[in-house]
Image 1 (cartoon, rainbow, N blue to C red):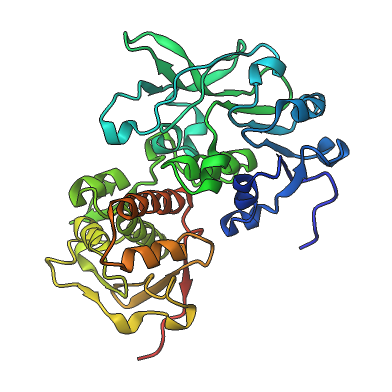
Image 2: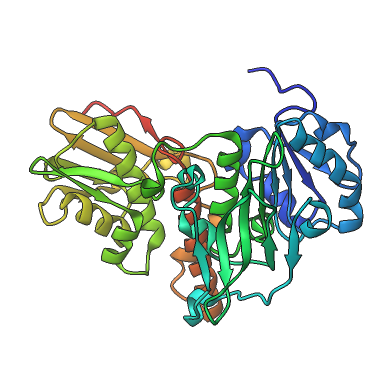
Length: 388
């Protein structure tokens, strides 16, 4: 494949912060072939012809100022632009008003109502975004221009609409514009805040048109199998309700593996599938049991010999085999940053203190977000089944 021409492709406007550089180094983003452009030292022509312009969150307003006309010109010529949070959007995006709001960091731990409400359920953009990717955190509210569509609004404690935290504008210019007060680059690159990674990945998929097939009702990528000829569809949320809250990453691994397997095997009766895996986690076991009833049906085997030890301790155990009739497919996790060394090492320790347990919880959520953000074929890959 030839390299994209200078100025084409995806231009990522950043300020060189640790979080922005960590995001740019994420192996999962390598297929996008993103071109970093530094807000201080870059040249305007580096984004002048870009098909997609990403304005990373938390850029210095005095440095961003010289870029805004070129970003707006990109919209006029038909580019897609992503403007992430804390970039003074109300000061340079036409027709937009922005107001600060108190930040609620940990509502999912404290039990508070986040007061965020998703909107426009039939909008095609919901093919790209799951609820968990857009409900986690925000810095202020926006009042979009006429014709724009808010996908997520913040409400007041009294229940009134307060403003948008994420909207799309596909009518004001020849291009497409996504604006949010959330800061996914900062939180993804910093390694904390559930949902941030999924928003970043999903926004890039929306910007490039690389969506998994489906409609809004399927934006959680439903997994469908047959029960005596009758289709049964499962979402990730369904599996989590069955499993509980302890091991969401294991549930997500099994969910992604089963979706991939079904895509290869075709329409399958769930009680006719046998599963072998090197992954011993209870989250994976529970997910397989709910969808395939393979544990109680004695068709589920944890086999340590299935591990791909040559791939190293981070990836070795993420191997699954699914057999239906005469066909067996073997899947292994792609080496694309879905599982990180810190998670494996911290999870193996038995003397963790409270702070380390809290950190492990965050790592579990982040891994889950990375897995769920990938379409079928992006997370696991089929590999040859050895002859026995």
